Image (cartoon, rainbow over all chains, first blue to last red; front, side, top):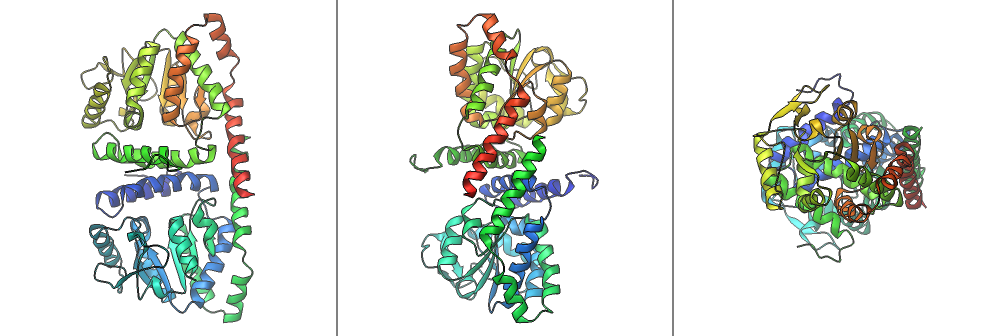
Length: 250
Length: 250
């Protein structure tokens, strides 16, 4: 039982969710380790949504609203941490939800399917029954995507994605919004918009932002995207880490 | 099968060892996540032993050689990654090996005992049969130490230790040498000497250094310790991280 006045309450709750998800077969082995890497970077950005991340959330949200076929990619870590918020976000954005796993096994796909169903998802793509195809440039099982979903999506929200897959999505003309705590990762550098923040804060922030931005006209939304420079934004995130280290150092 | 010319071979092998150890009951759930945090910091220091870490290894090694009752504390992560090298180091230093777990269960103690035995350890303290006592200031199960070992040790080598326990060891007058990849952690700041480096590189480096320094006289060894300033050394490690981020940024 973790007391909710513990200074690291959120972080400890996430850790508990991850361990439970691992034991329930939702997470691959590498998922727990990846969570630890995320913890380290979250610690370095101060375990809060920075102004820099807020700008990426805003631009990313505008792109998701303007999309013709937006898809939210869900892996084990995302399902373990924010399944209910993902279902809400998909609803607000009228976006599809697709299970998309780096280490794809039927057992894990089915376990994640159940989690998403329980969280209230109606349509779930990327299941074992779905018509899966390979995205160009990635012929391994990692390249499997749903025909109705990521294959034909114009905008994709990918939480905690690996570099090869992000590159393949971008090479296939997708506008990729990545959620990644490491501003130095290949995914962060490759994505169209990278939100350097913890997924447990990003998804609720996207829901709130979507409700606000949906009232805006297309031109205003398009300007929000055009005014956003991912490379500059990543540099800002690095500066946050640098100054946080300098502060610790003092 | 991981090819040994993969650029991140060492890192992938460690990851595989950790997952196997987790499945064998050697690691606590938190151990896999902690490994991920370590990966992130290792990445930031460049996945190599820095000159700064070399200085800490040298001073720490001198302290271990001069100790009357040196003890090497072993937790799940250390056992999973470097059990054979720990046994070698204990032999070179004539140091005791003590199983000391944050999440102590008989099952995990016994699993680690077997790993250390298989690695060639003769005497292993901190087992369920050992006379365990509580170290002053830490009355939870986390404070359990062997009477013959850490309770009466003058110098303790602690890999990947938590902050509370490091503080208790220092408060009890121990000279604590910590191995911790995060130079900002409470353990790093509290320890007498902190080696900011990956345990898979540190233990072999300590074996080599011990063989060299054992030939030195006591005064020379004492000077090595006196000339070492942990706070300054940690600042140097932070500078390495800062410049590595700046390099990535360019």
